Image (tube, rainbow, N blue to C red):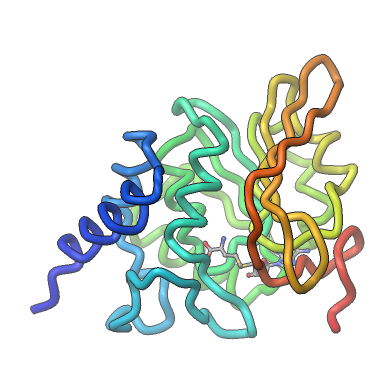
Length: 215
Ligand code: SAM
């Protein structure tokens, strides 16, 4: 029988702690959430590999390190309202649900949103709401958000996101062109925005009004 728990422990030690992820709450969530359950094939031998994986419809579940890094950047204490743009498999949403008060996650593709909603419900995540739509508009119904995480590549910070970000809020997003981006953290203080560039990254494109066209 495959020992998924041991695989996750190894993933956390070698890929996360070994590369400088040090928030104990983030490390614990990454060790707890069953990543394999969010894959099209839960038996996939590469479930805990150091790379993104296909989840169908041309989309991916991000590399574990990128999930942990982006989560760590959000500085979650446990009570925050979080907006995720790009639900994909639902894995990042589950990590956020472990570490915050409430998560609203928006996915453009209904088939992926349906799959994610089902796994999240099966795993008992009652504090996550999965919505279908163009997340480049954010999700105004539940705004403001203390944190916003964009898990698809955006050409720039969309105005609706910063409008929906609460004061003292933090936003993390891959910004750049379709072929490569810079992971960027934006903080909002008294209506003023401050940008900090973290590292290079490559995400699938944000497709929508404030993103790119389909092709
Ligand atoms: N966070 C995901 C996870 O844990 O599996 C991975 C996200 S994947 C890299 C990017 C996702 O963003 C894809 O599922 C894609 O369909 C979605 N996406 C792209 N443009 C979008 C938009 N405008 N609104 C919402 N979702 C979008």
